[in-house]
Length: 548
Ligand SMILES: Cc1cc2nc3c(=O)[nH]c(=O)nc-3n(C[C@H](O)[C@H](O)[C@H](O)COP(=O)(O)OP(=O)(O)OC[C@H]3O[C@@H](n4cnc5c(N)ncnc54)[C@H](O)[C@@H]3O)c2cc1C
Image 1 (cartoon, protein in one colour):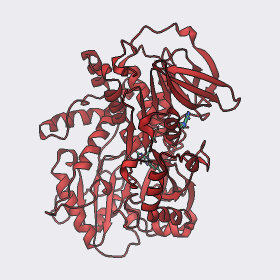
Image 2 (cartoon, protein in one colour):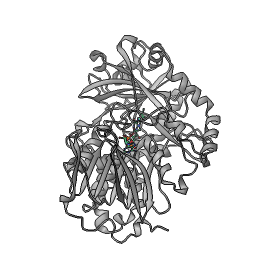
Image 3 (cartoon, protein in one colour):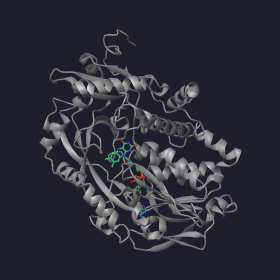
Image 4 (cartoon, helix red, strand yellow):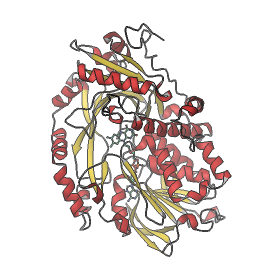
């Protein structure tokens, strides 16, 4: 039986070997000098937001750690984390209806899930703020922007629901700054494109403080910092092809993508943050806990507007009610994005059917190749239980551009086909487990075997927004000794000041206010949702006369 990594005597703390033992293993990639290091303590597979966050958090907790990151692509963080491949929503539950989908029997909207995701996102902002303040990630405006989040609904039932949702959320200190209106003129102030050309009828909207994040750029900044640290190295263009447990360590087989050269790395702890590549690596371990695991890939697509005069008129992320046709996937949203150095307008994501697990380095054989005797039943159950989801994905993927623009008109009635083009988004691979009996859950899951010598991420949503919390969970579960000393806890507090507090508690409202303000200042976020350009003052609950 392998010892738990937490019990290994000082495994992660020993004096590192001479840094001169590092050797070059490739040219520059994305501005990062790549190198293979000797005798790493930790190998991190993948360079997306999850891997880069785990790697930096570990190195900040124990500066003596030797960390090797291995990325199959020639560029860093170009899969799901890349700005174009996800919606860039800093998920905090403010306006995403999927966190508050229904009412209790007493008519109230339960907000527990919204509180949880909000607090997790606070951890993310605190961490990124600390990284900005200590020069790790550079200028925050390069990767995060304050963008009002809006929820817009129409029709009496949805208006009624939004009012109930707002009433429940407003009571909590997290959502104190959220506003509700049923006034068309106010909604027009907040999001003109949403109201222009719209037929009269009951409508309502809430607005709250929100963010838009370029997770790919943030991940590359974190990687860049890691690559500059002593005893740490990143290699790109190397694929981890196999993980094997032996001699109390993990042995990793690495293959150079261009030359076919094979090398081996050993480490006591491995973090598999390979996104769609995680399942295949887990299957290669032969771990008993992996039996029965499978993957269900879902592709994504955006409508993108390149017309500057239209992009200039939208300053928000606008969510709507979840359509009954795709309850599990949520609805599309109309988002201002800051990508490739300019403002863009994106609508989506549209889901699509795919058998690839990775957008760039995947292949159509990924899904069939992931089927094993031990997961066959779970995969078949999933196929049977999710026929309507598969049908939905296929029909979504086959829609014409006119069909898609028609869907967009729910949010932007005057949208015209000639202003929009279709681009591919990233792929989410949802975990399929025997215990789920065919159900597909849309969450991110941390997998680790009994000896805690490895952690792997499966699934996607809400993913990037909670990457900091996931890194924290990985450390708590697999490397708890890093937090057992007061020095370790203090280091974590420098990164996430409230990591060991429950900010949802009323008694912590003042602490929340203080830490939230500090993180916003460090990230230079101007959280004033009512300050949508060219607007009159926002009226809260029209008719009440209150304004700010
Ligand atoms: C359409 C869409 C919209 C989304 N919207 C949001 C959103 O608005 N907000 C949000 O918070 N989240 C969102 N997500 C989820 C979010 O993008 C992911 O949860 C997050 O990016 C996952 O990060 P990751 O580091 O685990 O994976 P990735 O970014 O995919 O990184 C995995 C890396 O591992 C590498 N790799 C794979 N296999 C190997 C191997 N064998 N060897 C070496 N390297 C390997 C890959 O090349 C890749 O660089 C969205 C996802 C999609 C697809």
